[in-house]
Image: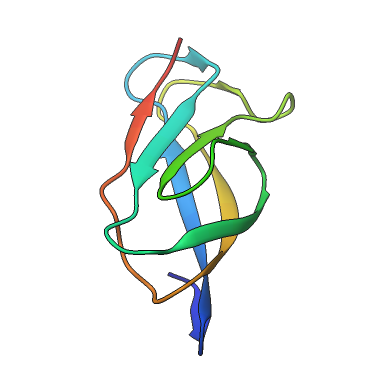
Length: 89
């Protein structure tokens, strides 16, 4: 979490390639409560409700081995830290 206010918060997610380069990434998570993402930058969101899927933009999908990129989001509700999974095609 980057910051919070009554009724919302801002978060940032770091996507890091492992020992091999990746060409595209997808991050998924489910909120434990009634949180809802309202805006994303540095990625493309799909889905709605408590399940969130964010895919790379055209300019940040290719990562060299051990390289990273970040995306940010705004959400409604109380700040929580869900467990995220990251995959690469």
